[in-house]
Image (tube, rainbow, N blue to C red; front, side, top):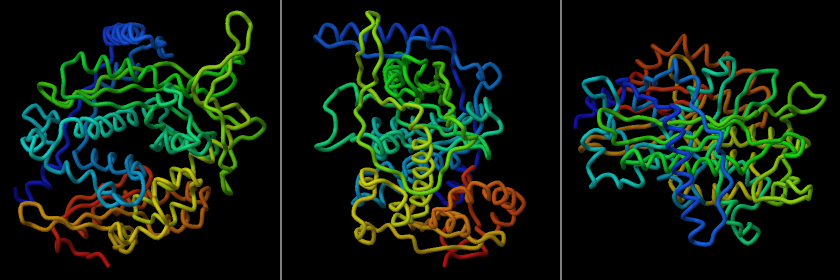
Length: 459
């Protein structure tokens, strides 16, 4: 396939439909009942789960979303930048999204679907594809829903395991053996607004090539994942944050479809006596017990496995979320050393040893000027049908400096102006690059072109 054809296919926007109905909620509850019955037969306790499942109100007006495959792959790249373990697979992990550059297309009804390459088992293992595309479509959907719900907020993607590792040992000799603590949402969406406390929502994204019953079961399992993170004291009204449970039908007839449900919750991390959290300075790595205390119906103190965040820890957790988001941006740009300084010791495991990045092939060593704006980051060259293709992931140079210097408040304050400048110069920047360019709401840039194209070259 010619590079020009691939770029055109990646650029063409298509519709992904949403399904969120009382019927879906009922089917999911019945699937959960079957799962619990099987556990009982095996002599296991049923999982705690959310049963107040409801359709997502926004889907009454927002029946779907329109986006390009390149925008979707950018979402996947940002979400998985810190998802690897160690540095041995840093290069493969960073550019994971590129395995799908020929996997998606728009059909005759302008709905997004798997292309012939996406269906070919020579190129894609179904389980891996379902997981990756489930994450990409799920998070893209969740961001659209949350931005529709809170239009004055920006919602950043944070790997939930990575954030929780700052307070709990989730792996190794210090980790809990409780089966239930392995049930966690796979992402948090963190709402940011200048002068306001953070909003947090739990998100669990799954994908499947199977029949619709597979999505019912996936959503039922997600309902258990949503009960394990609690904000506040349960006896004083503490509860899980709002959540979105999403199951993507990757091979649905007629086009890709996302099924989603919306358990209720309140996720504003308001710090008592402070209008906004203090995000400056390092974060202390805690060793919290993975238990949620509460008083049972007999009036006795008890607990269940999970992750409880009392009010006095909300500012700490806000700082964890801010620093983890910043580390994800730096990692996306290839600057793993700077990312390391923002993470706790347990979190740093995702980056491997400090001296091993060069051997992994992951380098923060390039930049480019597009539309008169300076960017820094990392690049990769690969062959597609015998032709060389160049990809760049990076950040505004001055915004990268803010993150490296851990000036997170200044970075947040300057981001709206940087995005506005990009919007004005985007058309010129695209001509300078000579291919596809996409910038997300955090200022992260992902660009692809035939090597040697464009008016500006990497330096």
